[in-house]
Length: 204
Image (cartoon, rainbow, N blue to C red; front, side, top):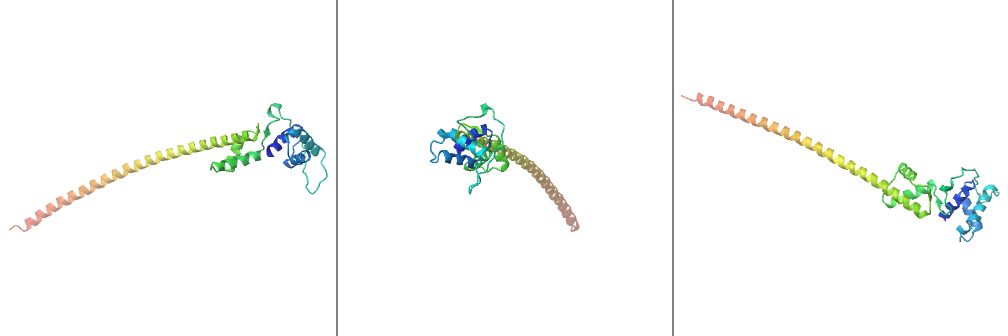
């Protein structure tokens, strides 16, 4: 049903009106109450939507909100009678759901950025989904490549850091061993001197 609504919405927009989804569903129920052959009755449905917008009926228990603000007429090359027009809300919803399937968590800012890279008009809903999947895959590849570079850079930084620390420790160790060696040599010379003094003291 959703693809029919977007298809009909695009045709109604050409006539200078912005229909809501509820208004389109109402027109479909009037023209095709059984929900069959909707596209074959598209022209009649479009006329019914325009009639609702241009001459709204009194409010009932199921009130219909009417928006009849004119919009700029799109260029013919940008409209396709057999295609669909995707709203920003639809893009956000599909991007979030598709990313979740791939195990990717996206922030609201990332969703908005991806949505700006996905088109608004497609030949059918499947083309829209495929383009969305490709946009998410490309974004994920870019993010993982960036993460891989960060890990590699961090690894090199850590390697350089520890090599520097190792040189510092080796230098300190060499200095310490040298000082210990000097101490024992000094103590050995002192002991020899003391032995001579003691031996001389006991000579008769």
